[in-house]
Image (tube, rainbow, N blue to C red; front, side):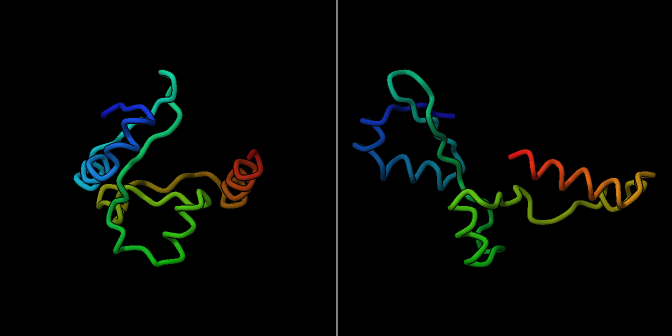
Length: 96
């Protein structure tokens, strides 16, 4: 991961964006304090315009991998009751 300050980012934005397109992450600092990170969007063609807009607004996080692997599908199901799992997800969402 590369690190840069705001002035350098502004002066060389095209170069930094080209690096991000190639998969590199850029950490931006202001007076040596990290304030933001620019990361590449993976497989944006797999998502609708609405999903991309929600991700850009910070409402939705896009998955890093678009497909569920075979190992996940072979996992043994949890003994946790559905109602308990649903309540846990709702409670976690309400924390923000």
